[in-house]
Structures are given as C-alpha cells and as structure tokens.
Length: 74
Image (cartoon, rainbow, N blue to C red; front, side, top):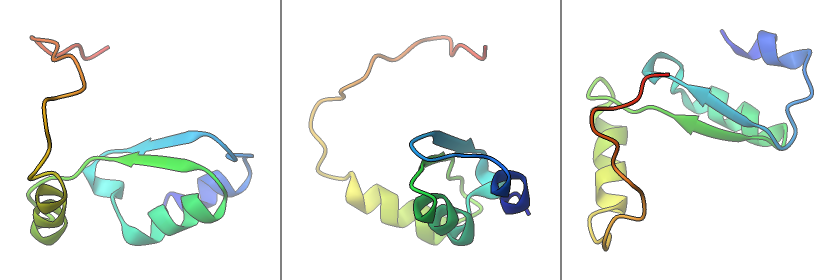
C-alpha cells in the first residue's frame, strides 16, 4: 500500500492527492491521523461512495469554480 511511503515524511498540513485506485478509507484515516488533508478521485467503481457524494451535493447552488475547457492536464 501507499502508507509506508508516507511514514518517512512529515506530511502535517500538506495536501495528499490520489487517483481512484488509492481512494480507500484506510488511507484517508491515516492521512487525517497524521494531521494532513486529502483530495481523492471517486469513480463508478465505488458506486456507494459515489452515490453518497452525489447526495451530499444534490442541493448545491451555483458553482464556485471556473471550468477550464478543454481540461488542462499539466
């Protein structure tokens, strides 16, 4: 897993990003326990999590971000 790679680093206050492969409860709990933050990608391969997030945002008002089209992958 990814956790042993983070053990040797001071991650307090940093933002840890991960793709859908690493979007796991164990890693999220670990990052929070080390006083860091996470930004994980959620895909259809985790339908329960995806549905929970959709429910959380169902009453969202106007977007608070700018859409870049086409997306910037750099």
